[in-house]
Image (tube, rainbow over all chains, first blue to last red; front, side, top):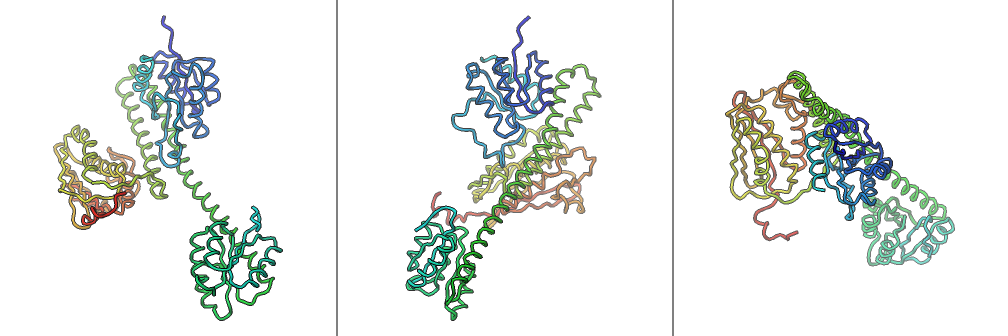
Length: 130
Length: 378
């Protein structure tokens, strides 16, 4: 039996976590879930996943970016593929949130909801090229 | 001269030394910081440097008059309270000064009590004005954030439901029979429509409160039409409708936001595809005269009855009623109308039942071709 690749999902919406977990498990991944940024970063360190998907708009509008920064700053987080999730079109007040120039690399920004096929394809591609 | 924070700063501009000294003494004793100037230019310079909260200005002075100083200071110094010092004979000019932005006038001769009282009243007025402005700004910000907040809160559950449907199809799709699949797909479509509605509602609210992000630049409508037609060609092909353009040469440019104008056109062309039968035709024509550029989108569809035509731009109005199979957000044309208005243009519709519908977008041609080459390039 091959070892399943590990994916960490960080999102403050339990239902979104659950729905996405079902899709990922169907794609034969082992899924870990965190409901807030802090837990997410802690789980990143303990689980050491192959890929993480982070919601952009948790609690505060910048929390997703903070999580991303923290993960990229860890030893294992430098090269690991990271996806960002967003449910809002970036307009109006959100427009003012400009990531700084030294912004850590995001491999993919996904718009919620994500089609199951697309999600699995993007992940396969990101993990395959690693 | 004291310029401590917390102490209100008052500027006195008067050519009479005795009056300047007297006023300074009274006001400093009353706890204010005071600056004085003998004449207008010096006074304006001081005001620009120190941004006083209040200024007393003598009307009759050599060189620059009190009236001019008032005009300049009320324009240059935010929230400054200006008081005109004037002799009894010039009350008429004092009134004029108030029309130019002075808060009040102080007739000569005046006593220290009158001066103190007016200084206090003027500064109270200023604080109230600043407070009101701050509150209004907070209220505006809250309103703007409210729209975003509500739409985010409304979209989140819809997004989650659609994600569940994706999950459902993924984990059990191959076990569903045709009916179950159809039910799920219909649910998905209705949810998607609702999501679309929230999104459009948010866009319209943003246009109304001026926070809709538009980048207005000089552009030519033929590029907008080409982009829109390109985007809509696959849909038309799929439905067996031909999409043609007819654009006149050398269109004058307009000032506009390309993205929202493309959305207007694709919206209208999209509507046309819904009501035009297979084998039909949609024609986008663009013509101009000296003052206006007209873009018309004509279809050979079923047309709209006259009683419905006048309501077509109203939010949530649907030509085909609630059971219409092509239901969208119900806000598409309202969005188009708002966008056209934000471009100082307008949108109109004409239709004949059984023959087709034509939408007409009218833009003012903003750049005079004569002057186009002589103006500065920004």
